[in-house]
Length: 203
Ligand code: MD3
Ligand code: FE
Image (cartoon, rainbow, N blue to C red; front, side, top):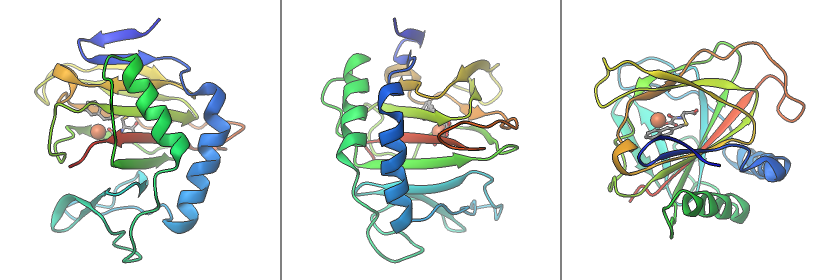
C-alpha cells in the first residue's frame, strides 16, 4: 500500500523494481549523448551531485542562476529524448498516486557517489506547481530529508531504496527537501552509485 507522507506526497515502495535494469540501460543511453557533469551554483560552488537530463527541457545551474534549458550547455545540442520507458513509468506512478495525465517534459538525472549530499532546498523553477514531481530511486540506498514549508522546519528522515518511487504534489510540492551524505555501499546494478530520476512538467 502507498505510504502517505502528507497529503499529496506518496511513497510507492518497489514500484520501479521490475523495470530497474531496463531503466538503468536507458539512462546509460542518455549519458552517452549527455554525460554526467557537476554543475556550478549561482554562488560559484561545484555541486557534489553529478547531473544530466533527458526530455525537451533540462534543469541547469550556472553563475547566472537556475533554469530549464532546451539545449545542453556542454554540447549546444538538444537534450536526448525522454526514453518511452521512463515517460511511461512516471505517468503510471503519478496515476497510482492520484495525478492522472502526468506529461513530464523534463527528466533530471542525479548521480550520487558515497559522501555526496544534496542540501535542503525547494524546487521552484517550474512554471506550474499544480503538476506533481515523480522521483525514482535506483542503486544504493539514501536517507531523504523531508522538511516543511520553511527551511528551519524540522525534517523527517525517510529511507529510499532501489526501486522506490515517490510522487510529490498538491500541498507537498513546495516542501523543503534534501539527501544526507551517501554511505559507502555497493549495488549490483549501479556499483557505488545512487541514481535518482526526477520527472517534472517544467513549462
Ligand atoms: C519534494 N532530488 O532533484 S528526489 C531534486 O534524491 C531533488 O536526487 C533528490 O531533490 C534526489 O530536486 C530528491 C525527491 C524529491 C524531488 C523533488 C521534490 C522530492 C521533492 C520536489 C518537491 C518536493
Ligand atoms: Fe529537489
